[in-house]
Image (cartoon, rainbow, N blue to C red):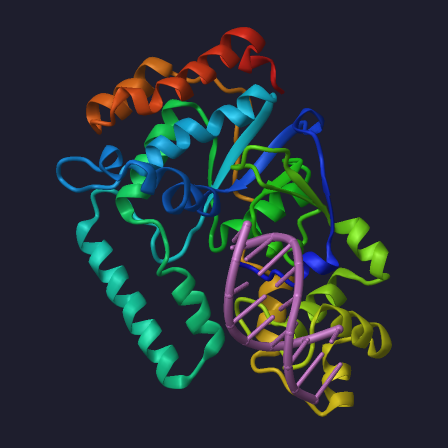
Length: 325
DNA sequence: CAATGCCA
DNA sequence: TGGCATTGG
């Protein structure tokens, strides 16, 4: 989701994949979700469901999606969302408890009309199922793709990692990455053509804004967590913030108001992220194990993943993934 | 310029 | 989704 109006504000340019270098901190939820909803699923639904009715389109998506990185000598690092759905495989009981807790929280938030909390909790509704999470982690592990656990939003954590210089780009379709302060963001990583590069510094420079002001402008327009002011779009938001300086001054001058403005602001300014992560960008995939996992353990038709594995294999042997530091 | 609805 | 035309302020 995110905010499409930010596209009007952001400096975005298409770049050849060859010019992408280094490490991409991928918003794993966003990345997997693309493969679960669009590409694979409807083309041959049966091929991505086990006899038990468990969806394994994520495994196919991973096998088909990773070669893009490998073939361009780009190291993906998958950043998973934290929060209520971070579950350990064998903790069935705590799983139920957490789900109940989440339901209760959502109920309370609804009663209180706390739109921000509702939005946050609902955004966790469309979370990946525990099975998807577990099998994705397992397969990524076999392929030696680093996984980082975010305390909350994966996107915020990915932005944090890039800000600290431990990765070069955030990978997500979501324009919100900009608001989390991601210096460089790559979009269209799942599509066929070239990716798009979204540049924070260039964006701020173009409009002569600070990041804080950009966040305020986005709040005026409306984000995933707040409604925004009716009648304010990207142009007006920038103009008003430029004229009055910040969110509150704009609202005061217009006699408007925004619900939970301060909380949404904090959400972007001080997201829940951690420095407690580490990864080795040197990838040594165990292709045999990965193939076995997908085709034997989860009964995915070998044809569905053959080409993907071949491409990964070729990348490994030709360029040597272990050269990437 | 913002919002809406339709279509590729 | 994203692009485009329309309408309404």
